[in-house]
Image (spheres, helix red, strand yellow):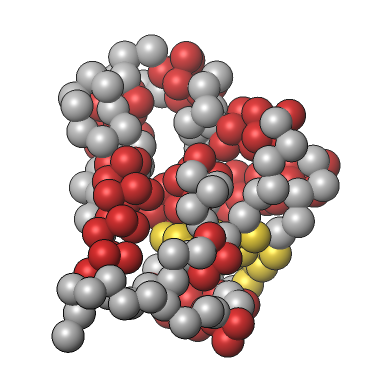
Length: 203
């Protein structure tokens, strides 16, 4: 469960913080060397909730050769061109233009048109005929992020991207995530996982 601070788990060329590379490359390589984990894509999964749900989708898709499945609970899927219209002042810091510029850089319209926008990323991958990881999405029916998740689900349907989408009672809260993390683990093909290879670093 690596920390991503408030980075949305992306690489930021303006700050030099490379959370995407850390999560999807360095951490995977380190854990495979440290523990007897399978090196196979089909046995390697990424998941997260809220901002981490976005990060799981972004990095699971970006590093599609590494991850075989993605779990995103209550994913913060508001990275699009509307970021450029955010106010300078807001009720909380996460709704301000300054916060998002700190994550994606000064030109938020450009960020919304880049692969940080998951729709752009998926369109590019489909154009390259990439086999996408399996995707599991769940969101509470009283979550403020519901509309964005429904919109993303409908986009995936339109693009004929196979995925599971669950809307269930709950809001943006641990009660919902605790329940649906268990369901997501049941969905993952854990019983089919191959035996790992001992790296030699584990006694």
